[in-house]
Amino acid sequence: AQKITQTQPGMFVQEKEAVTLDCTYDTSDQSYGLFWYKQPSSGEMIFLIYQGSYDEQNATEGRYSLNFQKARKSANLVISASQLGDSAMYFCAMRVHETSYDKVIFGPGTSLSVIP
Amino acid sequence: DAGITQSPRYKITETGRQVTLMCHQTWSHSYMFWYRQDLGHGLRLIYYSAAADITDKGEVPDGYVVSRSKTENFPLTLESATRSQTSVYFCASTFRDRDTGELFFGEGSRLTVL
Image (cartoon, rainbow over all chains, first blue to last red; front, side):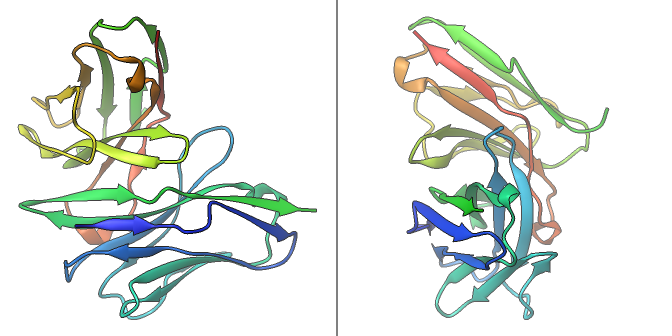
């Protein structure tokens, strides 16, 4: 069965430091996609980054990078130079094929707090 | 305006009543999804749809019904609301092509069942 695991319920990071949020996934599909979303206290879901399973290069978007280790089935999010505005919930998600169609499932999330 | 919209944004209802949450997108995305968000559980998939008239159950479908007669609309109905269905509900949509990436979210509908 497909599953996303985020083992860090809460994380703290000093402002301007880098932080890694862990995500492991389980799927038997050969072709899948991995996402990270940010949810600030205001509640909206903000797309951060996407990695396809066949992409050889790790995805990067500004201060966000996805450390994709296919053999270990991990897709960790790295945020460089943390800012106070990075304080939020972060969700890892996976798009997989289910019977005839795709579905997208999410992990339980990690709450990140950036300390001044 | 283009985008994905949910209505109502806030709803209070009573146990046993039927409630429908609406989701409308203007991009002609093939895929649409309904999630519920509860503390400690992240977003759990209720139902999803690959195209008009194609729907399937997600992780937590019990107590919910969906339909998709038109590509742009994906309503979620609670036929007889229960207190355990108090939650924030998110609708999302995306393209058929897996490698296009982003899942686009609505603003969420906060439902309280008394």
